[in-house]
Structures are given as structure tokens and as C-alpha cells.
Image (cartoon, rainbow, N blue to C red; front, side, top):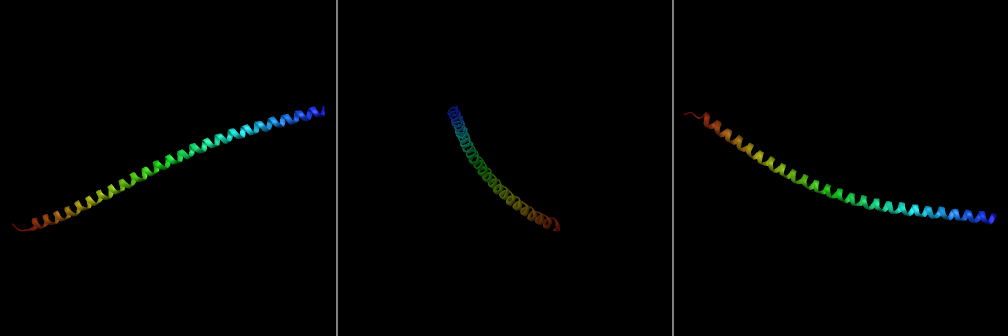
Length: 92
């Protein structure tokens, strides 16, 4: 009877150990899949971020160029207004 109980107990422990190992293996595989997925996701997000930063830099350069053109036009308008004022103030 005691021998039977010991054998049964040993078999139960062996089964539990096997189940634990299987669950551990499955969890490890799942974690590795998740890690791979998130690693790829992070790389994709970094690429998107880099692309957006490049686009932002290009837009900022375009804004600076347009602002320089506007300043040049404003300077020309001031000069033309001064010339027009001088011309209009001249007696005929």
C-alpha cells in the first residue's frame, strides 16, 4: 500500500513537472514571439519617426526660403514706396 502511494505520488509529481515544463516552454515561445513582434514594431515606428523628422526639416527649410522671399519683396515694396513718395512730392 505504501509503495503504491509512493509510486502514485511520484507519478503525480512527474506529471505536474511535465505540465509545468510544457507551460514554461509555451510561455517562453509566446514571449519570444512578442519580443520579436515588438522589436519589429519599434523599428517600424523609428523609421516612421525618422521619415517625419526629415519631412519636418524639409518643411522648415521651405518656410525659411519663403520667409526670405517675403522679406525681399517687403524690402522692395518699401523701396518702391519711397521712390513713389519722392516722385509724387516733386513739383511738376
